[in-house]
Length: 295
Ligand SMILES: [Zn+2]
Image 1 (cartoon, rainbow, N blue to C red):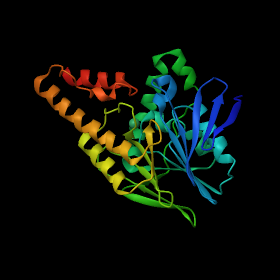
Image 2: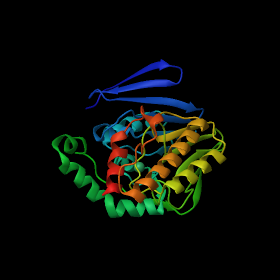
Image 3: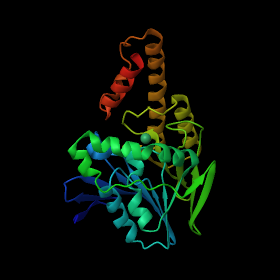
Image 4: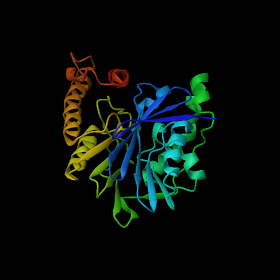
């Protein structure tokens, strides 16, 4: 039985500490939008994957469900306080740290929404990925013990709109054919100007590019800026301003240039990772990616 301790730290921040000592921070982003911000740097801390919540008086939308049930249950306990008549979940893409927490929501009666390619990727890969993680070691097997893959029940191709009540509208959009994956979704809370970007946007984290097209990711970030957001919740990292999105675009442009050089010469570029990102998390992931390109 998990015990949760909630403390109001300052106006918009509620710290939640679960019995294992993991700390997730719940922020109020805007009148209808909340975000659980992770802070991890490795698989045991879900790579720091964020989840979000948009609350209307009749319905709630949960954006991503985390890597394991501990995160999902914390999120669900916050949702239950609002007793929504309808509960929706959006999987922003198929990666395990964003979808393995689906089951508690399915059991609570939620409709799980995803782009059709995200749903297909989950059908093709999620079981295999879950088994692979479990086999890696006992600690991961324990963390994922209660996870069962639960698939989206609503799939869309271009966009769909949710009306959480008469004044709370969420546009769910697949902005570009391939950005972080080929099945990305972004959720825009129209009245608040808050965007939940999924892994199209990593804020002060080095991004996972295993399924990505960098040019597509840049275009998707530019699309986000065109919505004129006030606040952006990234897939990983702190709640951001439009300037942080511009920084992510600059990073990807510089990285793309370095990658082109690495590919052309098949040898380490002098400085493939922009030096001004030395404090960013998950550098090990980018090192791994660049090593892969050189082989
Ligand atoms: Zn991802």
